[in-house]
Amino acid sequence: MGKSTVVPFGPQHPVLPEPIHLDLELQDEKVVKAIPSIGYIHRGLEKLVEKRGFQEYVYIAERVCGICSFGHGWGYSKAIEGLMEIEVPRRAEYLRTIWHELSRLHSHLLWVGLGADALGFESLFMHAWRLRETILDMIEQTTGGRVIFSVCKVGGVRRDISDHDLKEIVSRLEKLKKEIDGLTALILNDETIHARLKGVGTVSFEDAKALGCVGPTARASGVPLDYRCGDEGGAYKELGFKPVTDTAGDCFARCKVRLLELYQAIDLIKGCVENMPAGEIAVPVKGFPPAAEYFTRVEQPRGEAVYYVKGNKTKNLERFRLRTPTNANLAVLVKMLQGCDLADVPNIILTIDPCISCCER
Amino acid sequence: MKQQLIPIQIPDLLGRVAQYKKDGYRMVQILCTRVPEGYELTYSFDKDCVLENLRLIVPEEGSVMSVTSQYWYAFVWENEIHDLFGLNVEFIAPEVDYGGKFFHLAKPMPWHELANAKQPASAVKVNLRSGLGIDASVKPASAKPTEGDK
Image 1 (tube, one colour):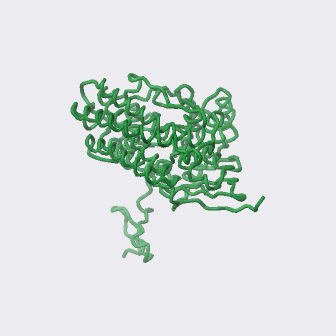
Image 2 (cartoon, rainbow over the protein chains, first blue to last red):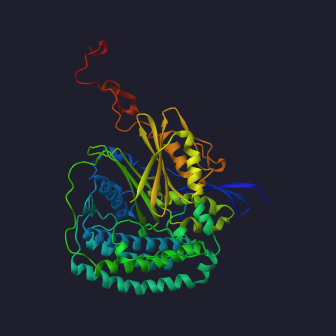
């Protein structure tokens, strides 16, 4: 047994898209303990709710994260709608579902690219990001933005999608699906990827439950936790929905769950287009949020996000709080890193798909 | 979304949390809000998409017991509450009690101050040129001139 050494990992590291710091206590090549610390991109966005009007704050909520921006705007709007008892038109809910699932597609493809880059599989990284561009083009065509959509508002959405554009989205997704087939086959059958990811960072079903995992991290361990099955809103109830799960609980299983969720997202978007209701896309919002509080949840690409709002009969809220999926998955990350090889640390961190800007807000 | 808010007292916290654990609830979050009485804490638990929330008020100089003995992963939120609000959370599991070093912050306890707290205008100091060490006090328009102003 060698002597203990502490190796600092991050905040700047080639595999980290965002800054998180970990002090890794090592004995030889094995990690004995991992101590996380965050705060490098803490922007105090929750606190800003005291200074911005409740309708204006949707734009700030979207800026919590550049990847799941739409989901944050939706979650915040949904919380205000619950607080003010606003009923959103069905068409708006379907449009929100389409944009949210497009976000999931671009988030998962981005993750595949980052994962491939961490493995040194550069061509796969470029291939995944090329496919992601198709999604970003669809988002730009329908919202005007590529990362920040600014289409969600309290009471509905700002923009409609024409029938022509909806048909075009479906036909482009059909073509994309064929390309994703190739991507999936490559990842799921590649020996090098198997060697690097299988049996690494394993979380059992019991541990996933005991450690409060959410999103693909929980589902890869067999926990069917997906808030789209709940009363999330959107079109999920009408479209029918079953979470993608796996039982292996390792890095490879987390990768597999995300790949299969790409197909699920495409099917959900097609379902929305086929069943798109006619009608209004927003309702007028009058008055200020009452002196009350409300919780709501949204299943983001990385997992369940919890939104809390507290009104005080003024245009500013008293409190807004967001518990992000990465915030919930930090505990399992600390556990997974205990006992792993130093060389596996980047892969383990990446397979929880950490979003530090979300986590710190 | 179905949700319940249950007010409790500080000594009841651990017992209630242990009961949720026994009943198979998942802990979803701990929320802290600064209120005039001190800190308003909300512990959220989920089972079958129903959210139950325990609500307690911790006085300004008070502290609260950690729930990591029941839900180990609560250390993330307890460390966060300590670092952002300055609330003392006692007996966090020792291996995950980061002692104020979880959040790297330029200003310690940035959310300790009460939201929208209005300070008397005469007490507000604006640091105009901090680099040169020049400070200026902002006074209300109605303030009478002092000896030093003449």
